[in-house]
Image (cartoon, rainbow, N blue to C red; front, side, top):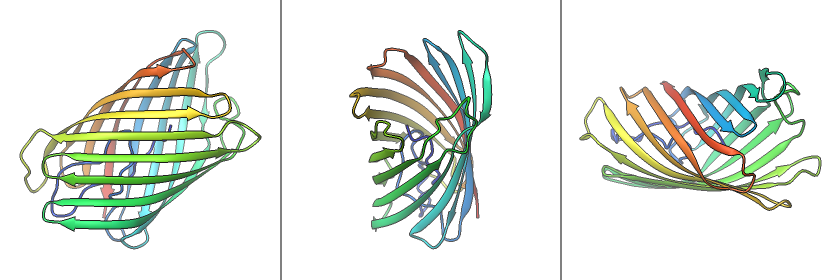
Length: 246
């Protein structure tokens, strides 16, 4: 599953942040930069995995963004030794395809390409390359937001490719104000189909997000597996921050 969504706030002071587990087509401001980091705990019948990624985007104009993501991974199996180390490094680019703005609402779409390299420790990372192509679309107004994405990941060494799909509904609990102070609820569906072996994974992902200013937010999500053909995943929990640097 794609773990990063390094984009931030709408213009015209629409205080809805990006979904927690789903990509959004809202890019950072002109020549902007920022970072996102969060801790994610994955509980399975085999043990527990903790993932701490750091993602840094940078805009080259208003419609094009580049970025890097580096995770640190700790694995605590029920049988065997614990292992920790840096995971595989990923580079990504985003290109805006369309943007339709009107008063207090926007509808946008973009393409995202992510290339992952086998740079991580062998004890916590797969020793293969992957290339992901994603289409993202989103509609946001003062009352709610809808975001969705579909992607295909090509995996090297004759390993199974992946098809990933996500959908997010966001609802602000507080009146819009400036400077922003907002509490948002999110309900997401996050799915993945592993081809060749025909394995499916689908999460229902409720979450909450607190925007404390135009540059900072806190967010948390709990993912419940609705479909898990592997039969080993119990749930995942994440808590993180995003910080926008102008």
